[in-house]
View 1 (tube, one colour):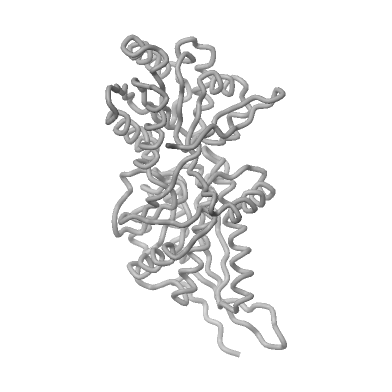
View 2: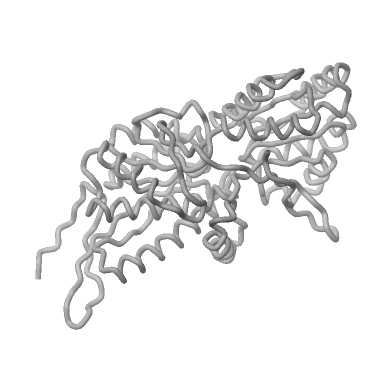
Length: 401
């Protein structure tokens, strides 16, 4: 029997599969790291993403076994809690363990924190949720499978404007992804004729008392309403699950509830809000909605059963960003297969990954990457809150223009 060699530099381990007709089949197991928020903020993306990756790995391994492809895949999942320090620690752990393929992190702040480690360690990082345009850099080792903040910001700004809004208060959590959305919405909305944007200083990630912020928003609403009238004013909030606390503290305020509110992709289909009647009431009173990267009808035969499988596995409804993590895993597997392993040189790994992406049509449809390695195509579905028979839930509102 051939000697089995552990190729530690590639983060893989050679194993012996089950025997077939008395013969042993040799294959290499590639361990892929996944950096997700499972117990922290925005776990509504992290938990379904973990389930999506697990399902992909099971399908890939079955497919490779059936075709006698000499690779299998496993995952090591790190719970980053959206904490940049944890993300850096876990990224170094993954590097020291020999891993070169990483799915996530899901937030832009985390991606920014681990970027130098990825570039220096010849690791390929593919995020399913990062949108910050500040990370749109050509020829680095960071790729993103969701539309960036410029695409998302332009889409929701056009939708807000189409509703007759002329004055907009833009607010954001102080992190790269949400600030990127705040800036993109501001730029896209001010490009419309006869509009005014009130840009607030981003609030700290450690904020728990939002009274000062809400008082500032009230003052801006009052000023804009004097110019445009109340019905032509709105508030855009780029946040994660802390929006529940913002809405709780804003609920019942006549000025804050007198205008429509809108959000970013970090607070979409959040299960956190459903346990707060006050927050749900505020969202409904203000006709709040936020954009979800939309899944194409052309790929419905793929994403519909996958969505059901993820829900059954983890108990949470996945959005398109979680579905994108499934596609990432498949393209990584195809990249390994195409190269008979992980290419030694980072440039070769990047080029092969881009080529495999271009050839792939998955649960999120076909994927077009721009020169910076970010998804350049996609539309958005808007989701808001409803109350049926005393039970709150998210509901589809409309599609982006």
